[in-house]
Length: 222
Image (cartoon, rainbow, N blue to C red; front, top):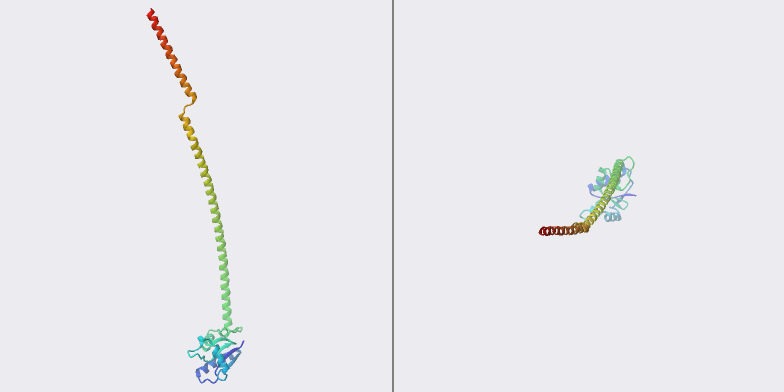
């Protein structure tokens, strides 16, 4: 990957020249390979730069000013973006390059990686806790289902008991009329005894009347 810096070597603007020199000087000081693309003496370079700078980075007149920085054909940014990345020690990320060992950007990247690992471990711990909570929830659900099964069994037993009681009551109701009928109708033996007693009483009365009549007749004869 080659860093391309589009500059205007014959620009009459002091501000533009100063910005171009700062970008080029930084890349040279940090031994970052780059190609300096002059748009003042090469119309193709100027045309390519204008066509590949994103619309949001172009000024109102539509003509982007140098310096403009690319990594091959990928747009990196203008001078303002370059300056911000340099101040934040993320210039290699800005250029799309891997930071060399020992740089501040590498240390920052390592710290970010450690933080990411710590976040991952925390996430794993959270996941384990979530799994434990899920297992506890499953156990609670199983216990609840067992309680429901026990309740259903109790309800079935209660229904069976109610059916038995109802059957007993029906049987008692069937026997009641027989007992009532039995209580209302006197036994046949009792009826026969009463009739026999009445007949005996009549014979005794008859006998007494005969005896009285004989006594009367004896007195008359005397």
